[in-house]
Image 1 (cartoon, rainbow, N blue to C red):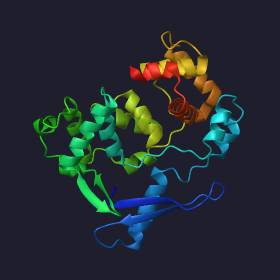
Image 2: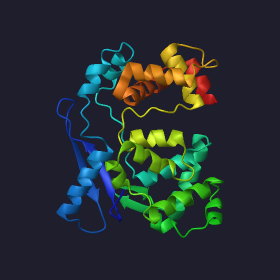
Image 3: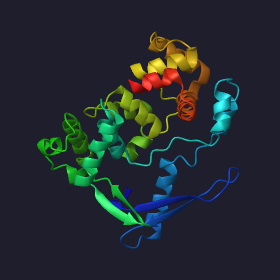
Image 4: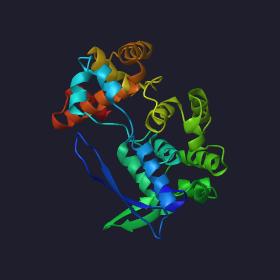
Length: 279
């Protein structure tokens, strides 16, 4: 992790129980860190991992839904987490566009090996992301040599926006919702689908469900309507039903059911889902 320009190694360990949860964080750095820095770092980790999220109101409502209640029981305590910065999340989102997972991993690895910082700590070695300023002078041709294709242009345009101060993650956290959405949509190469994930994962908007991709549409049609994914429910109808069922928690509810579905399929493959994953 980079925090305030300093590359860090972090080791997070369970230090509690279900009833009294706790996390120990060990911080590795090349030089001493003062108390104020560590306090700010701790606050940022709590924010990124959603450690202060009170799930009780969501559970109180969700346990009244016969489909959601079993998922809540199985995943009690689960909360979305986005360990990276907004800039890092956007880079990953760009690399994931129109590519299978193996290809995305190859592109991300090439970028990190070329521009990242390799950190060794606690017997491990991981790459930390580059800063926007470090990448701002790189040419599109140089990025294309790493075989990221057309994404090179998007990576550089987003990088410039951060390097020049056009985007401030911390200001956006305090901004009105529509201003936040507009700022993200203004970024080159970032569309409604990515913005929806960002508003949910990075900015903790639990009702952020305004866009459903064709792939998700097929899965939601089967999951919520038991309808053949080849003949999916219209997106507008899906959005209306999910809003009526889950209200201000709709995206968090979908997140729980989505995770539950994929973990169930990992243990005992679900034929219709496996077919969609293969696509």
